[in-house]
Image (cartoon, rainbow, N blue to C red):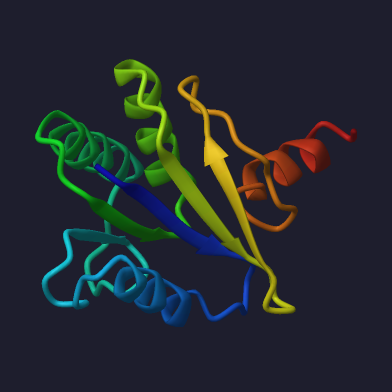
Length: 135
């Protein structure tokens, strides 16, 4: 089973990277098990829904030993993914973090849900808290 997450800094072309990675794994875009949350949806999703839905989907794919490709910029989705990786002790998850300059930083997510962070990706909450707390 492969669990591959694709994300990036604001303004990076993550959609092209996402499609390329799916293709490199010998899937067509239409046939791949994928989750794209919530960027291209006309629906408004509550943060709890994003978190819980991502957990449910990742859990099902891990338990069924099925490949899953995820494209997201949502902290809530990422938290859900990381919790399920940790809960299952899953070791083969990979995250691609695309920088605005086109560099694809690939990191393995360890069984504890930790990986190498890239500045400008999943750090809005940290930056806002720093500003609020005058850090």
